[in-house]
Length: 95
Image (tube, rainbow, N blue to C red; front, side, top):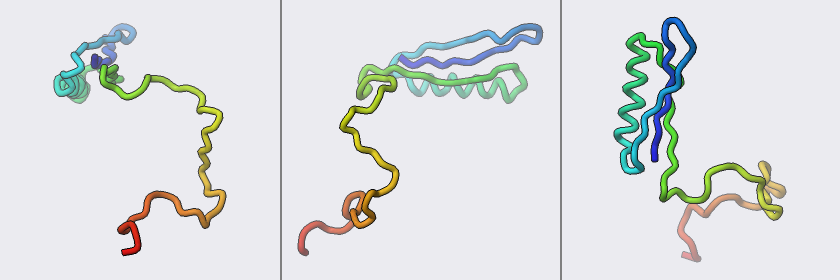
């Protein structure tokens, strides 16, 4: 499912949340909807906070944030600058 969210603020009142729901295979339609809301804002209507959120059935992994595993060893600086980072950029082997 894909959902487009936005706020509409009447001239005399608080913002009102709005949304439109699209199927997982309707990304183009959802993007058009979001752009239509942004066009309304550019035309002078009181529309703000346009965003698009999805929970797709074929997404890899679970959504959310968790603590890193205990054996996770990420560091921002190389402990030893002599250790090359990344993959080799040239041909592999002796040739």
